Structure formats: C-alpha cells, structure tokens
Image 1: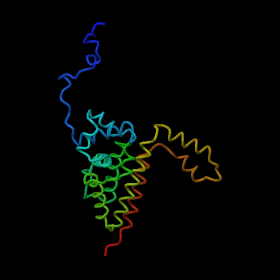
Image 2: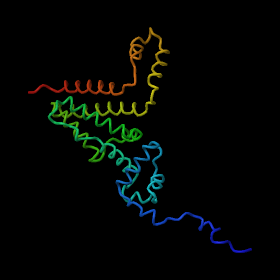
Image 3: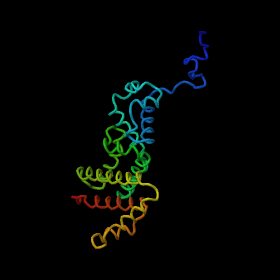
Length: 232
C-alpha cells in the first residue's frame, strides 16, 4: 500500500494560524472580567464557567488564576464592573437631598439595566471591593448630609438599593408588550367582591416602568428625609 500523501493526513488538513491573525491580546484582569461579564450578559450566570471563560479568552482556563485567585474573586470582580458603571459624576452636592437621591437612584438603575442578566450575581454577592463601594459611600453621604443618623443612613441606603434592584429586575425580565395582557388576564380572573382594590389598580396598569420608578423612589426618599431627627 502506498504511503498517504501529506495532504491526506489529519495534521496537514488542520487550519493553521497565520501572521495575519496578529498576536493574541495580553491576558489582563480587566480583559478577563469584561469577557466574563459579556458571557453573563449573553447567556446568564449559568453560562459562566472557567472552561467557557478560557475558551472565550483563547487561553488555558488555569491561566485565569494568575490574575484572580478563584471563581469567588471573579464574581466579586463582575459586581465591581457593574457597580463601576454607575455615573457618580451626575451628583450635584448643591442640589436638594431629594433630588440627589433621585439622581443616584437613576444612575444605579441604568447601570443595573445595562447588565440585566448579571443582576442575580449582584444580588447574591453585593459590593465587596473599593470600586464597587464608591456608589454606596456617595449615597450614604447624601443621607448623612440631610441629617440622618449613621444608622438611619445605612438603613435608608439599603432600602433605596433594594428598591432600585427590584425595579431593574422587573424591567429586565419583562417581555415587551406582555405586561398589559398579563394584567388583563389577571383582572378577568379576579372576583370583584373579593379583590376590589386590586381590580381597580389593574384597570390603570400599564407598561410605564419609568413612572412607577419615579413615584416609588421619590416616595421612599421623602419618607427617609422626614425621618431625620430635628436639629439640636
């Protein structure tokens, strides 16, 4: 039997890299985190594994551990990347506290909506790095400058953050055009005598998440500011 020709061998048939491919981008912490966040944005937290991350980066998964010690550190870095997207420069210290709270809440919401599928990671872990904690420090400062005690400021910050995350989660998971039809279906199933108030509310239900957000956060802000102890 004649020897196989070089072109018949599997090795010869395999694609080869050429110089036109260019050198691979250097592996850095920032590149790892942004690639991991992109994986989560596309397919959710369940898509994130070190194997898939290594494939997306074009490196051995073990190489990631030279920049981040474990997956827990990677998840914290993802939270940092999301929280780092909050526009802290939008705050105007000369504005009334209520407006400053609203600006901070809107900036937080926009950062959350920009990475809606990463919300479960943010909710599960919370901010744990200096970069991720900067928005927390800003909101605490706003509440303290309005006269709230440190304990009140911390509780208020947690309440505002929870409200923003809740609204962002609802908006991120909502299917376009279904909110109104879902409300109509629920309305039709509710006995009028047992649920008069819910039926009344559903009659006016719509898809205006912006209106609902503004009403809820502003009401919360006013309640918090009213709780500040009187000046001594």
